[in-house]
Image (cartoon, rainbow, N blue to C red; front, side):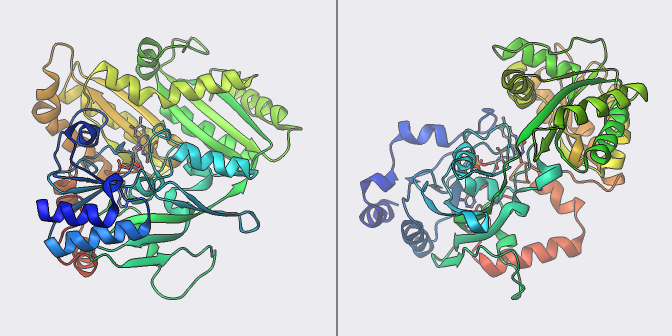
Length: 465
Ligand SMILES: Cc1cc2nc3c(=O)[nH]c(=O)nc-3n(C[C@H](O)[C@H](O)[C@H](O)COP(=O)(O)OP(=O)(O)OC[C@H]3O[C@@H](n4cnc5c(N)ncnc54)[C@H](O)[C@@H]3O)c2cc1C
């Protein structure tokens, strides 16, 4: 290992390599503190050439590699387990903004909030938006095919990527940075790297789609009696607004209470005894008429008894408050304690059925456990999280006692033709389950792709496959 580190330092310079335990420490555990790992060396390349040099050396020494972005992943993929850790954080340059092509090319270490700012500075929108946007990086977002709160209008990260540059396990550089919207020249290889969770190579840069900035965003905080009513509201809003709904998030009573308890400067925008709230956002190309549209839509929903009550955000501060509540549910839940987490999706038409049957399962199998089911109703993705019954050993519940309940929730998802990982990925956490949930044909195709690109199995071993 010392000969490898010496050659690495020759190639990347002292800034690019660290064995300092103090510097390495934040990189070897996940954000929830659930998993702890180790690495012999932290590599911090500043260019694609340096990533290539590091990967070539890893190949020569037969060393496994773990790429890392913001380390905000939820499935134990970014925490190294003895591999060489390659952090992309120094690769944070803007390579190009092509306004006429509505595209920007960024390096993998650009943080999502910075990507949004770059778009905004060019009078464009980069729509990806999620709770970890202050730390998650372009390379990690691509590698997990991140979702977030705007998917129903703009799609997942996969839908926002035009081209990719990646370094392969043997150190070769693939420049696929094409800003094309049409390109039918054989296999579209970028899609292999999107959602691959670092198992096929290191993403070093990407060309991303930009969109017109909406002139106005109208936002409402709505109380509803059930998830079924929330889905009815979604349908009504999509029809009435001509597809202008960009955010549609469900917030349960307990999720709101935890945010109010743990997150400073928050308050309940519309106190109610009802168990569910919806945060609804419309993005419109003109200021005129937007408020009327939202008011009419909500009045109609109240008259049809879909919505119980609603408040329209009058100021930017009010909009910021409702989004702060929504985006801090996961953070508040962490402050509350451990939870069985299920990042699942079903067709939107089956969200209400899933929520009802899932809650019933929980009550039957673990009475006393509490449900925090929240998230992206607009695209069928619910974070169906279950906290242990009061007084239960949290670790034991999450690692042992709660597992039959988790399996039952995923069985229910399978019966509804849903996914056991809507947006967080597989990592090490769901690897074993993936192997028996997917069909043998699908698993064999995935293994064949892995063998073709990473024949020695050195990229993120133990993740996904
Ligand atoms: C509070 C909170 C809220 C969140 N909300 C959402 C949400 O709404 N939607 C959502 O989809 N996710 C969400 N996440 C999960 C997480 O933010 C995403 O998975 C994100 O895409 C991870 O980006 P990252 O840069 O932190 O990647 P990391 O966590 O560093 O890595 C994730 C995976 O990608 C691999 N990887 C990282 N960079 C590269 C690269 N350059 N090349 C190849 N492989 C790489 C890693 O090895 C790992 O397997 C949330 C997380 C938190 C903490």
